[in-house]
Image (cartoon, rainbow, N blue to C red; front, side, top):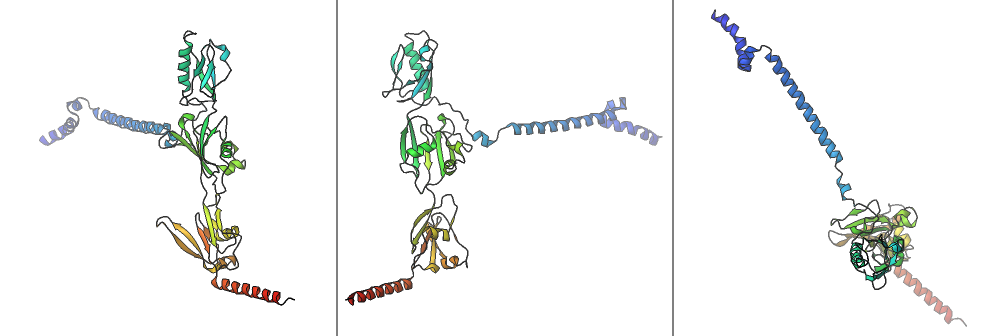
Length: 367
């Protein structure tokens, strides 16, 4: 009897320990609890999926770092520009219709002529400061003047042209000037100039309208590089951009290869966008070897930047000329030295002496 009682009590006791007294009162509690747990798991999974979707959307929406580093371009002359002689200004004011569409030039003393107010000194002021000054002066004649000043044309433009040009320095230019016009004012580029030109512009003048324009570390300047050769060959004429005041144009010196020794025309030769020049090309530019050159013992003197000295690399130019050995590539700032042959020079001197002696004898015995 006790065994049967324990068997009958055991299921209820198990439900009681799992679910409490409510389990005894509701025999369907097990299925409800299971359903509740299933719903809880489903909700958790859905919440996790939504979290990842939102996170991914946030990552896509955020702009890349490279885009944030790019400056915002515009063609407006910024308010920080200080007016100077020969600048042209435009004015608008409801009570002064005679000023509409009539640019006024800043004279050599930095003054402008304004109706009613007369001569007003504006040199050294920004456009906004000029507005405040004119509103103050015109307030005597007009109630609450609201004059607006805009810069029609900048004529006084200090532009720096540095590097491999014939007349480097700061050039005061007037009016609209392009990159090629500025290089021409600087005397043109030198024969050793490279084609990779860099332009630096203050951010208050807007960014440089070139695809590779970037802000510098200080975020005060935009910097861009362009290929001068492609502009001159009309391959990229759109890169012949307008130059603004305080722009800095840098023309780097191109790398060179030097040929010295027993060659017909020793000197330096510009690589001109070539990463390397071969030994035969360098000798060809030097117009070939002289008659006394020791072609088998030529050497390349190459600068080792780590050791701050030059290394000697032997080159058998004669075998290279005969096709027995491959041509050797030279790098920028390499020196190709072709020594003279002592034996060849001694033989040449002997031949010259014999010729001179024979000529003297012939002259002596001539009646």
